[in-house]
Length: 251
Image 1: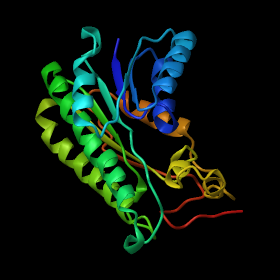
Image 2: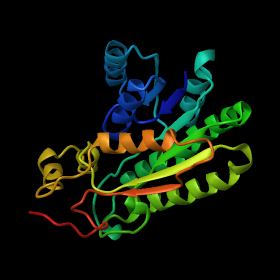
Image 3: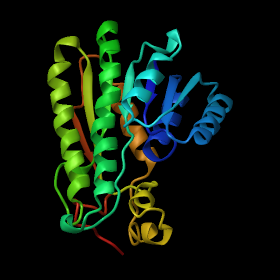
């Protein structure tokens, strides 16, 4: 039985990825900050799929909490076949000269440092096991910037660079590294970005059909199940109404 660790598994892409892999017999290590949600998802996955699940409630940007959580894993969950670095967020939407520095810290700490902290803990385990696959959930915002995206885009450009560096450093160990770069997706992303303003968040997706969590889950599962000699390095995906970070066809 293969094991997958998913960060940010309480909603959006992470939650959908958890259900997709559980459906196909993986045992799961689910991380999130919201322990009640983790417990509810754990219960559902066990009831629906008979999945083996371990939940780790910690903030990925807390280095010591991440270390303690990973070290606490039961022995039969320490052979991690797939790591999905999904935890991430956008906070605020403003010009850089008007930016909220607390939002900047939150995005950098979560999107960049959190990804690094968790990866640093898991990569040696994969190397010791002689196999593994790291899937980083990035964004098309890591390919091109857009107005008022500044620091969020910078964090995703960093994820793009980190992923490429991982690919080089993991090469000799036979560990696969994949980046999935979604465009506009209807998750809690905009709700978080606008600090809980549901009406403003809903306007983001008006006039077109955005990506869903299940779309990214399908792609993650496809990437993780290619033959041993095949790796999908970088996957950019948008809804059909989106050409790039700025151009949409809205009805």
